[in-house]
Length: 513
Ligand SMILES: [Zn+2]
Image (cartoon, rainbow, N blue to C red; front, side):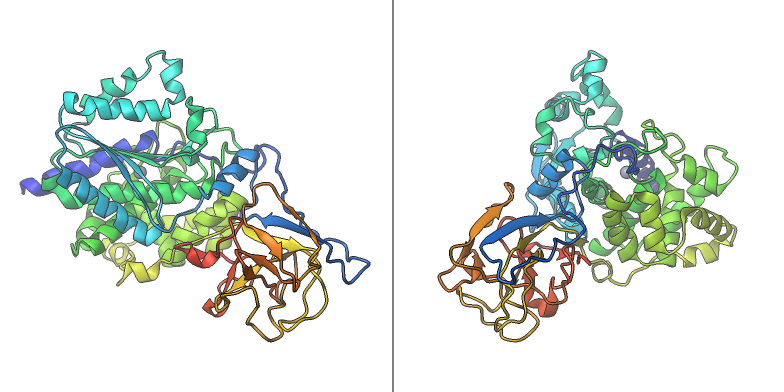
């Protein structure tokens, strides 16, 4: 059973090695954050005195999530807190890493992205020799230049000195600015202007352990998915350098997802084996802590990732899924953490608070192995169980004419703007009561927020257009925060700040209400 033991070793090492930045970042508290920039007043604008106040159109962005600081707003405007339609990955490979390895990794990355959403990845592949890998380590260091490069006065030698430790291990970590505890973590401030998602990975002997390596890639990609939407949530309220989400959730979630995804993508039929391995591992209680709860609470509380027990995390996240479902655990919760903080997002998603969860999980884990194993997730089709869905910023217009038209009764107040899929000219085709056309005086002055690149115009007939297509309101949007028309009948899609339709995002936009 050479393969099995090597396989096991790889898992353990990969798991241990993820700490460098399988986390690194983002506390969950709102209280310690820089002052909020409320770009979106919650209270509606006052009712205008004139019902035909259509001479001034204000075009603004309905942010979701509301950015907590200028940097977050910048990242949201760039679209970097949410996936793209497709991903383009860049590979830096050691001299002794064959192209077939890179091809295999590319496949694994694309498969993970098909489940969770597409983020571009810069992938740093180390091989089995120092000479072959040094240039890759230097590339990685030059990109990030984290604070330790400076504080230790060692420059990139910290990276190259550590190279030899990872050969033959499968070690990997993922990083992006969304991971860092503070904005000062990265000395190279240039990375903030177009922040990358990186995965660093020792892939020597890839061909011998394709499934294990595939799992590691998906584990790391799951971290990108977990942390990218947090937009550098910065420091927690207790002052510890915790991340936006606790270690057990980040690592257990990444590992569990990777186990299930690789099982499905590579047709392994190995869920039972993987789950049993993790059960045996967690039973070791390798740090000798007194309770399951203590083990979870201490998991990865520091940058050193002490008390990290990935196998226990796999069972804890599995238990969450058994109490809710995969979609809630891997999408809804992760999407809500930035706005609500971890504890409130957990409560709202799961329907009970963290303390109740710890107690309940503690009791759950006293049951027999067969009951524990039976309770683990075995989705028949993971792709059907998870729908990538993310919040998006949308464009809104205030000051439309309030004269009823063939689409319905428009509001002069700030409302989300939509495209109608059937339209192909500046004349709106919809007729009815639910989707009022946005109209204005052809002389209207249009005021746009500076970050909006959509071209908003008023036609000679008074239709307000973007990209030469008419715009609509939705009559069920009754507040300035509503975007309930998103995706209705698959025909109505919000106008995005860059002028495109939310139909073309490559994921399902979360609905505002
Ligand atoms: Zn990890």
